[in-house]
Image (tube, rainbow, N blue to C red; front, side):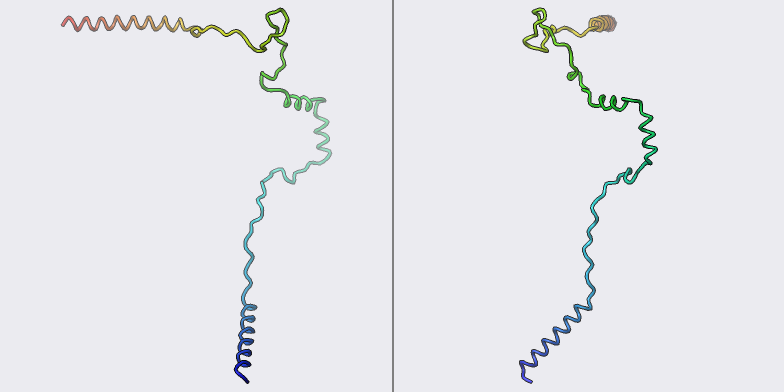
Length: 140
């Protein structure tokens, strides 16, 4: 046997040994992949017998659900409620600026005169009491 044959035989033996070790090694577990998130639906799988469903439909007064649907689709803000067309100052002619009204003049809020009267009365009482106290201090 030549040196090259010996080396080839050793290499073949080492390769068989590596293959045997690889075969004996346990296979790695696949990487954990969680299942996609399923949103909880409490109504999933619910059902009702056809006879019960038909009894519920028969119990509904005629036109009731149509009214509910109509209410849901109706406008909810006051700006969407149709109104009569405004008439302008020319006796029935439409206004050139619809929705415009003359501004109110600035004035105190309603009822403020009663608050002012109460404050004036309290001020007079406070001044009188202060004058009495200062007069008593000056006499000492």
